[in-house]
Structure formats: C-alpha cells, structure tokens
Length: 153
Image 1 (tube, rainbow, N blue to C red):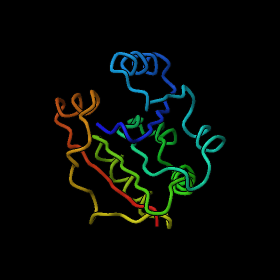
Image 2 (cartoon, rainbow, N blue to C red):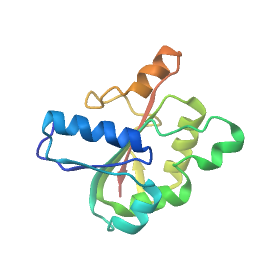
Image 3 (spheres, rainbow, N blue to C red):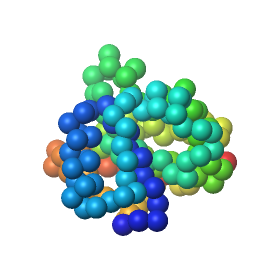
C-alpha cells in the first residue's frame, strides 16, 4: 500500500520470516526487509536513536499464563528503548486481542515520558491496519481487539 516507505520486519520465528520473504518476492516488494532475530537485541544493537518514523507492533505474543507475563515484549525498559528510537513526532501503533495485556500495554506506554497517547485510552481501529491471522483467530474466539496509538514527544 505504501511503496514510498521502507519496512523492516523483526521476528524470531524462522518459518514466519521465510513465509514473509516468499510473499515479498511473489508481490515484488523492494521496500520490505526482515531480520530473523530478537526484536529487543536488534533495537538495542542495530537501530540508531530517533531513526524510526513509525513502529507497528500488531498482536505480540500475549504469554497468557501469569507466570510467563515477564516474557511479554512491552516491558518498561523495552518501551523506553523503543521511544528513544522513534523520531520526534513518530508513532507507535500497537494492537492486541488479549484484554489484560491491552490494559498492561496502556499503563506501560502511558508511563513512558517520551510518549503521548493520541486517544483517551484506546484508539479506534485505523482503516490502514491490516487484519492479521492472529486478529482473525482472536475475533473468532470472541476476543475484543484493542488498538493503542502513541506519538513520540
């Protein structure tokens, strides 16, 4: 939809990256690249400060068991590192279908001083956000999808 933008996908699941790159080749998308590594490592080691216009984080693993919540991606340290890499005015768009994770994300993102919520709480679903297979699965299970849209101060 946006050939004028460059996209970098970060994913640790090797088969997922393989499927993505096959689809990128099929569609002839020269503006899409992917790194098969942990997003936390890539962000800390490879992405310069204030270099990202937008970060799209759709349906990160919710780690639903309470004992696994510490594995959730949107922890305060990661959110701060992410905010530092967003250019001033840049956007962070997050979506999830797990209500407790959505509330946790809202609190964590809201506590980051470099980010400002663009909505009062959760944002309406932007038409530009594609429906993922994880979203479809969640909707089929009766989950409510929540979007959060924050901007770098």
